Amino acid sequence: MASPRFTGKSALVTGGASGIGRATALRLASEGASVVATDVNAELLGKLSADAEGCDGSVATLVGDVGSEGGVTAIIDASVAQLGKLDVVVNAAGVLSFSHTHELSLDEWNRLITINLTGTFLVCRGALPHLLATRGNIVNLASTAAHRGQAWAAAYVASKGGVLALTRALAVEYGGAGLRVNSISPGAIDTPITAAFHLPEGADASLLKRAMPIGPFGTPEGIAAAIAYVGSDEASHMNGADLLVDGATLA
Image 1 (cartoon, rainbow, N blue to C red):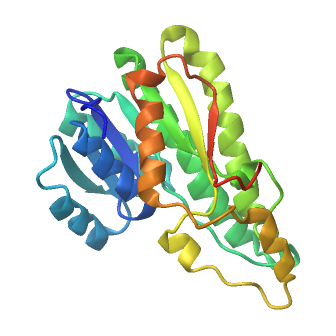
Image 2 (cartoon, helix red, strand yellow):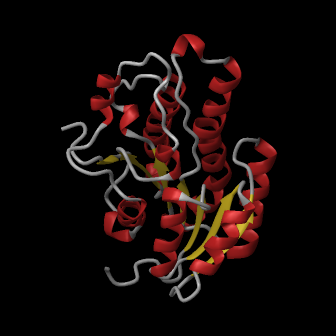
C-alpha cells in the first residue's frame, strides 16, 4: 500500500457499515485519516469500530439516515463536531432492488431515489461549506448502471444516472473555488447487495450478461482503493470525472 496519504485528513463515509462503505472507512483510516462512518445499521457499525483498531488513523461511528433532510443535517453537524473539519466526503450509502418495471411500486421507486440520489445531494449540500473551507473533495458512488441500461432496475439506474450528473454539475460549479467532485462507477462487486440478487419471475436471464464482468466479481476493497486514490492529493487534477472499475463490463 502507498504511504499514508490521509494523515491529518478528516473524512465522512456514508453507508459505512458494510460493503464498499465499510471497506472505504477502513482503507482511509489505514492511511491515517480520522473517519466518521455513518449508517442506519447500528449493529454492523459496532463491528466496524472493532475492526478499525490498530489503524494509523481512526474510525468513529455514527448511526444516521441519509434518507431525510434532518437526518443528514445531524450527520454533518455531528461529523464536524467529532472531526473539527471535513477534507473528504464519500457517498457510499445505497440500496438496490430488482423487479419488472411494470410491477415497480411508487413507494419502491421513491425509496431508491431518496437514498441513492437525494441522499447523495443532501450530504453534498451539507458538506459543501466545510469542504470549501479546506479545499477538499467529494467522491460519489455511481455505477455501471449509470452508463448502460440494466433490466429490472429502473429506479436504481435512474438514481445512479442522477448521481453521475450531479457529480459533474458540482465539479463545474465549485471547481474554481478549489473543490473537487468525482465519482466511481463499480461494476458487479461482491457485497451484501449483490448477494441478495434474484431474478424476477419470468425474467430473461440472458440480459444478465450486460452487467457481468470479464472474470470474477470485484471486491469492496478494490473499490475502496480506487476511492482512496480519487480522494487523495495524488488525484489533484481529477475533477468532474467518473472512474470505471468494472472488470471490462463496459469495454
